[in-house]
Image 1 (cartoon, rainbow, N blue to C red):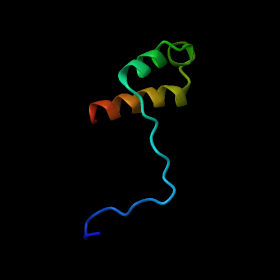
Image 2: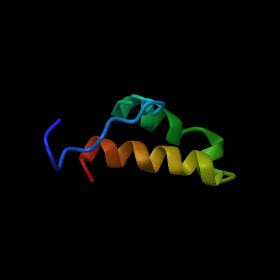
Image 3: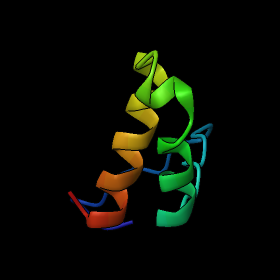
Image 4: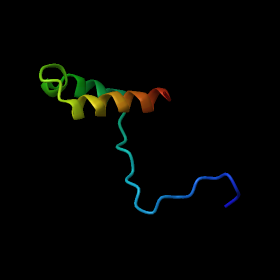
Length: 54
């Protein structure tokens, strides 16, 4: 590797691959809109951030 390149993690978990349809389906789940479970809402939010590059 050249200088300035990040090192590869040995035991990094691959991010869950989700497309927009899967995220919208998750938004219809009562855990997202009724009980607003923080972990579930974060998964949806992070998924949209990955899709939009944000």
